[in-house]
Length: 196
Image 1 (cartoon, rainbow, N blue to C red):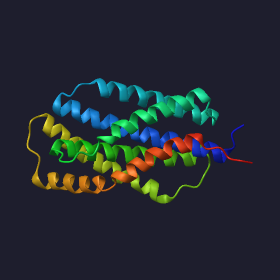
Image 2: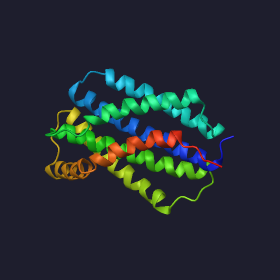
Image 3: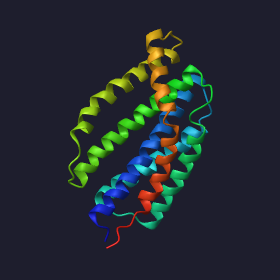
Image 4: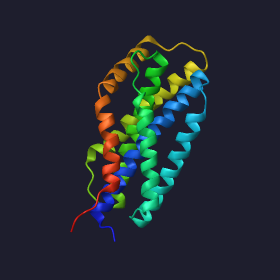
């Protein structure tokens, strides 16, 4: 029987994986909407995200991971690690930067909500700042959605909004090493065993 602490570590790993899949899902969605990119990557990421979501819901009930589930999650983790290698480009266009910013905000929002949910599932105290951040993410993701819609409609985006995206992008690009570190953590959390 998996103990509570071990289960909460596994759950955290699945949340982190889900957030990175969400990041790729939003990124690919923006690429499709603004560049008519191929939907192969989009379909693959959506399929992995749907599977991971289903496993997360099941895990909330069982609080344990079967080996088959763990291996499936690890294969999604490998897939997302490969996709993240080319996520931060050397000289990205504005729409690339917008896709990165939007997908990062949606991923952070999912991670934040996941931690709040972890507190509920495992009856653990979660810092109040997580609940406070909910509105922050809602507001910022709305800004990105509006900009993607404007660009998709062939309309101009205000200079001030573009500068804001550039500023946010710089912050994210500076986190490139942390992103790769996070991805390593996913498998460590999925493999975690509490030695008694």
